[in-house]
Amino acid sequence: MSEAGIAELAFGEAEYRARLEAVRAPMAALGTEVCLISTPENIFYLTGLDHWGYFAPHLLIVPAAGEMVLVTRAMEKVTVAHQVRSAGFQGHEDYETAADVTVRWLHDRGLAKARLAKAADVVTEVLEERGTSATRIGLEKWSSGLPYGLAETLVAGLPGATWIDVTGLVDGLRLVKSPAEQRCMRAAARVSDAAMAAAIGALRVGAGERAVAAECQRAMIEAGGTFPGFGPFIRPSARLGEEHTTWGEGRFAPGDAVFLELSGCVRRYHAPLGRLVFLEAPSPGAERMALVCREAFDAVLEALRPGALAREVYAAWQRVVDRAGLAHYRRHHCGYLVGIGFPPSWTGGNRVTGLRHDSDLPIQAGMSFHILSWLMGTGQGDCFVSDTVLLTDSGPEVLTTAPRELLVR
Image 1 (tube, one colour):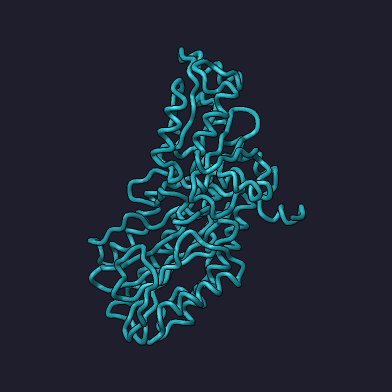
Image 2 (image 1 turned 90 degrees about the vertical axis):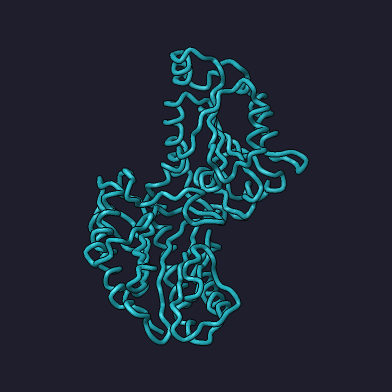
């Protein structure tokens, strides 16, 4: 592969250096000599490794100083060589695991001994103050990429270590997107718009669910997208309440309310959007709910400002809903942060960072959100509108542009 081809697969070296430095600052504060990162989205964030090989556990060794090391199955060597410039590589055969290789690597470098390895002066000072010389190793304990057996192997192989939970350390850095990441988000939104237009265009009474899904995915690929973390979700009225199921073998019937939620994906960055489409005629109350959905969505945009708290943004959405006579109706969130995603999710991992009624998450410029104005099962009509919104220094930018008025086919 040419150097130009390799460069197309990842961000520039300066971006990766900045990301690593941002990880090492909290590592030093925690006194960790090394962190073991296993969440696919976080490994991608730090290395650029974009493949379907994450079904097998990966471990990214992040020492307090020196080169990172990526541990995967040995057969991934060529892919890693083509895509990764920010980390070395250690492969394992299929009779062992990433944990076995990681334990050996740490032992070989003295980082697994029950004494202090002086990787950085700041680590020495922190540990001496705490009166301990045991190696402190950071581990993402709530990671979809860390099976229980793998964790057991690590702990058994490193009996002298003190384990520090660093769940969320890298995830927190990913919440604010760099200018390069924001460009990926905008590109993903263009793919989302093309896919939604194709899905809506294929919807009609008698159309098969599979046919609509095929048109949607064809448009997604032709617009420059790759495989997304989720979906697309395509469901008729009979299955509206099934949160995470998609097309089946049925055909759409007169009066169906068809749920469409999808996301384009560019370089693993996602920009989801969703719409509820009515076939032949809207269901009772839908027109009024559509107006409420749009008003509540606009209220979220008004509240989405740097320095606001997530719960304040949710409260803005809920106030509109309450004024519409739906005070009984509550959602677990009115949106969530979105960006990097690998299957089986576009939410960025196995946790959802939502705009919830009880969240004190500070809103910052550079954050990107899937905003959902969702009024389903209200008892007074159904409607659903969602879009990806990027918060810039000048205010919220709605990235996806599919029509937001009541949609009838």
